Length: 283
Image (cartoon, rainbow, N blue to C red; front, side, top):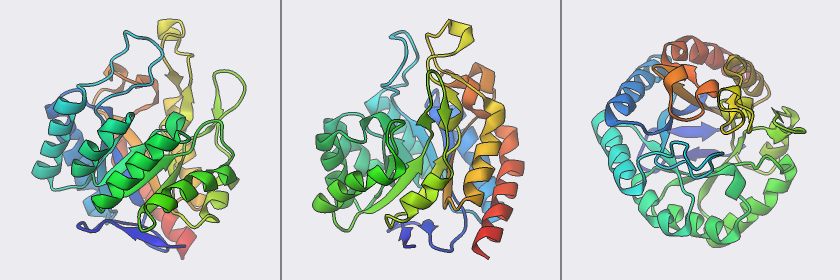
């Protein structure tokens, strides 16, 4: 299995390396919260010797309701992400939803993320691959909820045709299972590994209950926060090279996907456990 490294950072994923961590907030709320969460996660990962990337979205374009909080937007959001990157001296990851955002985001983000629902949009994939490759970044691709793991080979091929040297990571985030539910097939991690790319697990979004938040009568996505550690531990045991996790200082008050994110205080114990699992897998 190939190892991918950020060109200007001490961050690697894949091979027999340590568990890579992409973690932070679901969506940017304010700079104080972003710095607080990023500072704590950097501290924990530093103590554990785990390569860390701060993650947050500047816009959540795929919302159940038009009134749902989406984030600060491109201009303000990228400025916040740049400040986190500078003040904490950590690489950052954020997602792109539109073609004309690709170059702007790739200028700032070390890892550029392709959202699951958009991973088959050829023009967007091509724009993101070109921009990320030109910036010497890495592309983190969420596997769509409607795709079989082995079918992501077509996405990887598209990327390779326009940016052959670009590092690509595939991310498992659950598969639609009937209505309002997702499941994670742990065998899919190996299937994506077989395509020659590192694989992460988005344990936060894998426990979503799409369109099934009882607090809003289905106007937002529900979730099963207690399932995040279960999914994360299972996926790392199945060979996942990295974890994608979202935290908040007050999860119930989070402005987006509150039922799925973990309290920041849970980060240390969970990452310690995941590190031990990873070490036993690659031993």
